[in-house]
Amino acid sequence: MNSHRSFHEQQQIRLVVEYDGTRYHGWQAQPRVPTIQGVIEDSLQQIIQQRTLVTAAGRTDAGVHAVAQVASFRVGAARSHRDWRYVLNRLLPSDISVRSAERVGNDFHPRFSAKTKRYEYRILHRHERSGLAWNRAWHIWRNLSVQDMQEAARKFCGTHDFTSFRCMPTQTQDTLCTVVCCEVTHDNADIVFTVEANRFLKQMVRVMAGTCVDVGAGKIPASSISDILEARDRCQAGRTAPPHGLYLMNVTYDGWCSGG
Image (tube, rainbow, N blue to C red; front, side, top):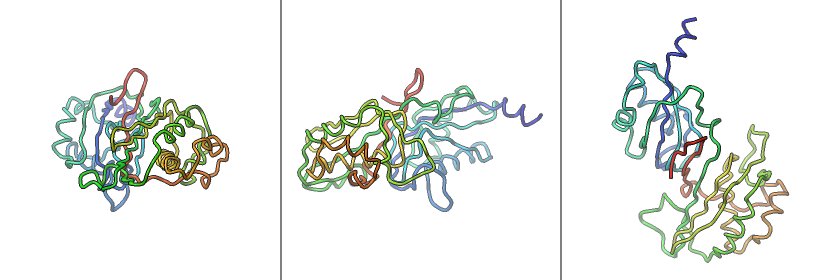
């Protein structure tokens, strides 16, 4: 009876978190290595003197960045009035920042309530490497046809089985994903692959981006993307892009979006 009452006395706090994933082994807490979840939970423990689970909309991989990741945690109602953005940012390292924090209903779930997630994969397309963006974009100096990459990206739109575009088998049996937008844009040396979908498989965006690069390099015809999807065979798709060019840009919910 006491545990039932305690649950209802708790409030849920929703965070929008920005981070540079370079130093971390992904979002999910793991023993003996730094992770985004682990660092945030450590900071919360200093504030409320107990371990609290922080749940995210998506478990970004090692080296992957986020502009507007969504996470939440539960806290006793007596502490729910805190300025969580302020107190957490005082404790978090400089490469993790809480952009906003607000109380939400207990029926909210960062992952299961989400409607879509949007990712960007950033490519630096020039001969010389960058001294500033070495951990923020994939440097490619070889010739790329942006027009062919754009044609390939459009073929991902719609509902498809993305087995060919996941890096490894997981416990997830459902491999159908609905891509609502997929495009390639460029501005001088910057090429950006953007994809928004209702769900993503393990490393799916990185395989999609790597395949588009192989299309741009002339290794894979843009017209073959549909055949690769139908093959349901990872060996038919292109390379897996490195993690440091990938960003979780935002997560959308009914009536709310975590970023611009």
